[in-house]
Figure (cartoon, rainbow, N blue to C red):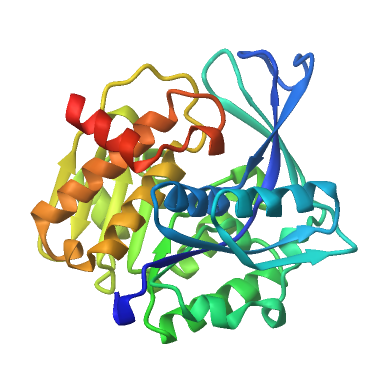
Length: 323
């Protein structure tokens, strides 16, 4: 990247997920819960770092035991936490998450408001953001002020400094006042991103069409984009660049827990892009980068929890070599 920068700066929420000790039960039926660090933007930062890349996180945590624990987890995983601020008046966000017997995830959030929602533009670590080769974010930070304004300002700072903007909406319907507001606000910053990744579910939510055919995906394409990705779970990934498009199959693994697989995919892809930005214009290089990202996502599903299951580069290359 410009000036030899390879830093991925991730912006948004980091929280504690409470997951049942028993699989396949509703939240009400769960006998007990284990705490697991979570939050998609934080997972992406740790994924980049685990793969040997430079990563930083920008966001707000509660000045409480959970908040301090999360900041320590970032540091322990090699992520620069210079963009983390603490709020003395609000708690760190909590989410109770379960995988029901029918395979659907059920969420219950405690954020009214949580510290991550209270980040202000004045609290942004501007110098850190300016160092980003890629600035990555989701849509949860767009839901409420003052975090929304901080998010928009951080995007501006990164763009002006020459960073690529990477957007994974990471839809969590339960957190939005309505489906309509979710759709409107998620799309309100759509045309500013260079790289956008959506899941099948998000594609249907944003277009209103239950299909992954090219004509449907292209409704989300903007001329300003460099890359649009649609992840298809264990079916791999479809990609759309300015001059070419295609699909890359995934890797067959024994799935245990899909939590964090999308974040692992994004982190791995961004790691490859900052190492060689020309892959955005070179189909062969891009397919290799996506193959690497697919392998990273696949490995993450073979273990429980998002952060503990994020692989190293050696593990990813071993899976690719075996395939």
